[in-house]
Amino acid sequence: MNETTWRARAATTFDCEKRPATGTRGMVVTNHPLASAAGAEMLAAGGNAVDAAVAALFTLTVVEPMMVGILGGGITHLRLPDGSHRIIDGLPTAPAATRPDIYRPVSETLPTYLDTEGRENAVGPKATAAPGALPAWCETLERFGTMTLADVIEPAIRHASRGFRITPFLHECIADTAADLAKDAEIARLYLPDGAPLAAGARLVQGDYAEVLRDIVREGVGALHGGALGRAVADHFGRVGGFLSLADLAGYRTAERAVVRGTYRGVEIVGPPPPSSGGVHIIQMLNILEGYDIRSLGFGTAATLHLIAEALKIAFADRKAATGDPAFVATPVARLLDKAYAAERRAAIDPDRAQAWSAAVAMLESANTTHITVADADGRIVCSTQTINSLFGARIIVPGTGMVANNHMYLFDPHPGHALSIAPGKRVTTSMSPMIAFAGGRPRYALGLPGGLRIFGSAMQAFLNLIDHGMTLQEAVEAPRLWTQGHTVEVEAAVPEPVRDGLRGRGHAIVVLPHVASGMNAIEFHDDGTMTGAACWRADGTPIGVSGGHARKGVRFWPDRAKPA
Image 1 (cartoon, rainbow, N blue to C red):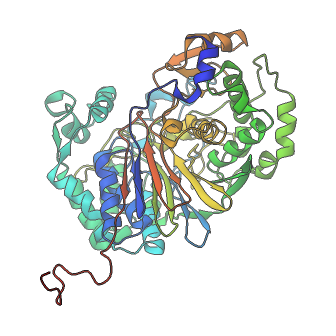
Image 2: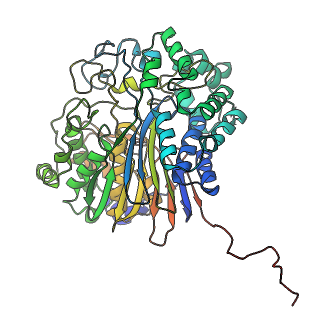
């Protein structure tokens, strides 16, 4: 198939592997069917989108343990029925015992810039930062939900205590990390029984973790952040040489932040601010691309993909200036969101030739994360991206708890003297992009995905698919993607060879990969009140819509005054 044929067929050049769901009372889209079912259960029981989202997240800690846990953290973008937005920042922070030179870096250049001697910042107890997931989820539920903590945790306890079937995806993740998992007796006991990775279809029971969840039901967030459970965690890290202490757990505080906003062809795009780079750079790239007729250039053509690649390179060249904990790093957000600044950058793009854009060393970021998108009929939308960073985090379990520790210390620069160097209390940086788009002042799309540095570029391309190329939501989340941060250009295998040749002809070095980033979960809001939910093939994503409702007033099983005809 040549590029002309590809361009003419546009959104029909690939087959969607999954099917969307529809609903009127609510929609839950997560990266595991049991988590989506847990959220839908809350909606069916009369709860709102926040209840559903928190239930789904707790369930994901059981059924997607390689991606998310209460010893992790993340960002939640909440839109309320009154039209206001909240960004709940539960990102982990560097423990008080850390300092800029706690690790010994092994390199000054990519791709090993973040690596340290003994992999201490990536695997084992010294890799764990102070977690923020549990306080963020519990506070969000208390402020904006309607159900009790016991209600929303019940599905997670059920699946942890009874067990659930391992998916092929989870099996592959266990197999990929088996060498590290085998070094920790607790995590190996669960995921490497008899020394081999749990097979797809095997049942995983997490009794210790079920008891931890019951403790949280009884004691709330304080169980971990200051209580007996927290003391057990801190004592373990003290014994094995980690930095995390009870004071770090008890002293953790979430942060609430204002959203960043922009527009693309009349559609308002709303997302998180730093320390997430997602919202800022998605809007920046859309501002740059708004100056081109992307629709006429066509989906998936070399001309379009070239412009996307150049916009990505510009964003990464600017990323260091905008990404960081705003309590520690000055962030020129307003300039990066300015359409005039985008015009300056656009003017330097050569439409026929790849360029090298000035950039500092770009940080690496784990692709192993999870994302949920949830909405209810009253106008609440919850977009939440959560992670323990790498697959199975630090690849250790705190004995007797079933909790997988994060390895968020790997996201700091191990070299002293830089904006992203380690400092006690500093929040990690992230590319998380829980985004919501509005048309005519009404919600139109909500989406997000896992994928580390590849998150915000993938989310941006989804908006192009929807706004410029007129794709359905299912097509938009499954469409082939591209990514670069200024070196090679990664393209998915579904991009045809003639298009790759067109990119090579413009000077891009092409690498073909099975996938770019991971499973996107999205909701589209229609004018008639219907919602469409879609999840893509890159993870175990499942949309579940809730429709129907109560019986019509006055209906009885057999009306009292009914008489035979």
